[in-house]
Length: 337
Length: 158
Length: 118
Image (cartoon, chains in turn orange, brown, yellow):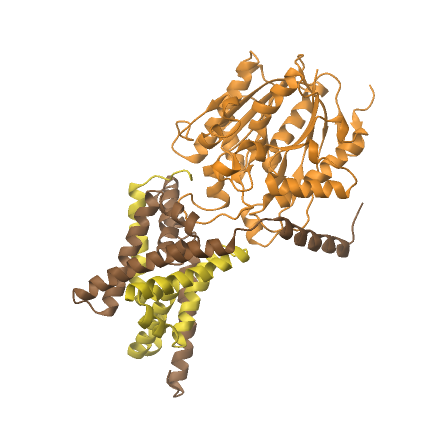
C-alpha cells in the first residue's frame, strides 16, 4: 500500500472516507440569519429546555448528534468512535452532551478549529480501518462563551467593530466507509501560527496568519493552486480577518479573494443583525458546513472545496498574563463523488 | 523555516501595525456625542434627586448618599430587565462613567452567576468586574491619606 | 440652571472618556479604576470640590465623584481619628454606594434571570 502522506502536513485518502450525514442545530439569532431556513433545528429560546447556558450547549450537541445519526439511518450503538470538542473549560459541554450516547469518545480542543480537527481525525480513522462509522461533533453557545471569556451577559459594554458574535450552534457529522456523494479526499493538519497579536477583541486578525499558513501548505502538499477548488471556506475569520487573509495570501504569490468564503460572514446579516465583524465559535463553521456547504457538494454544484476552520488558542489566564493569541487552522478537502 | 528571534519580533511589529490600519474603528465623534447625551441625562437625573433631597431639608452629604443609592437601584433594575446593556451599546462611556455603570457591573455578575450557587456563584463572583474599582479606590485614598497625615504631622496644612 | 450645568459637565466627562474607549484598547474595568483613583487624586489636590460646587450632579454622579467622596471621607477620618482614620475613612465614605450596589445587585439576582444579548 502506497504511503498516504503528502508533503509535510497532509494526508491523501482514496475512497473511503465518505461523509454519510450531518446535523445542524442553532439558536434564535442564527435562525434569523441568511442561512436560517437551511438548519435542521432552531430553538428560539436558546435554552433547549435547560436552565443554564452550559446545559443548553450540551443538549444542543446531543441533538445535533442524534440528527446526524438518524439521517444516516443508524443508531448511536452503530457509531464506533466520537471525536468532539467545544470552547469551554475542560470541554464540559461535549462531555455532558454526548454522555447519553454512550459512544467511545475522544475529547478535543482546537478552539474554533475543532470542527476541522474532529472531521480530520474521523476521516483518518475511517480511512485507516479503525471504524466503519465515526462521529465528529462540535458546538458553541453565545451565553456560555461570553460568560467564560468576556463578561456576564447583563454587563453593559460597547463592543468594538472588530468583535465577533459567538454562534449558538452545534454541527455533527457521520464519517464512514459506505458510499455517499461526499468524500473527504484529504486533510492538511495545521500548526500553531503566532504573529504576536494580543487583542482578544480582534480574533480574525489573530487567526488569519494560521489560515494562510494551512492553505498555502495544502496547496504545496497537494501540488495545487486555488484553481483546483471551487471555494476555499474559512470558519470564522470574519470581515476583518478575511481581508487580512487575502493580503497575506497575495504576499505569498497567490490570490484566493474570488474563491474565498467565510462561515462567520455567511452566518449573519452584518447590517440588520448588528454582529460587527461576523460570527465566530466552533458552532459557526460546523453548522454552516452541515447546513449550507455539504448540500452543495452532495448535489455536485460544488465539486471540490477546502474547508479551513481556524481557532484562536488562548485562555482567560493566558490573556491576563499578557500572552499573545496564536492561531491554528485545519484544512479538510471535501469533494463530490 | 526557522526564524531568528529578531526576525520574529520584526514580523510581529509589522503585523500589529498592519492590523491596526486594517481594523475599522467606531466613528469617535459620533460616539462622543452619544456618550455626551446619555451621560448628561444620567447626571441630570442625579441632580434632580439631589435637589429634591435638599428641598426636604437634608444636608449635602445626606442628599449625595440618597442620590447614589437611588441611582444604584435604578441601574440594578435596568440591568435585571436587560435594558442597561442597550443603553450602553448606544451611549458607551455615557453609561460606563456614572455610578450607574458601577452598579451594573455588580448586578450583572450577581444575576449571571446565581446558577453556580449562592456562595460559590454570587458570593465569589459578584465582584468580578467591580472588584478592582473598590480595591484601588481604597488603596489610592489610603496612600493619599497617609501623605496627608504625614504632611499634617510635619506642620503642612492642605 | 443647575440642571443645565449638570448635563453639560457630566456629558463632557463622558465624552472625554469615550475617546479613551475608542482610541485605546482599555477595557471598561481599567477605565473605572482610573476614574475612581483620578477622582481621589483630584480631590486631594482640592481641584474636584470646586467642580462639584459648580456642576453638582455633573461632577458627583460620574465615578470621578466617587473617588472624590473617598478622599473627603479619608480627610475627615484623619482629622477625627488621626492615624487610625487612614484605615477608616475610605470605606466609611463609600459605604452607601458600595452597600447599595451589593444589596440591590443581590436582590436583583433573586428576582431576575440571565438573558441573551440582543
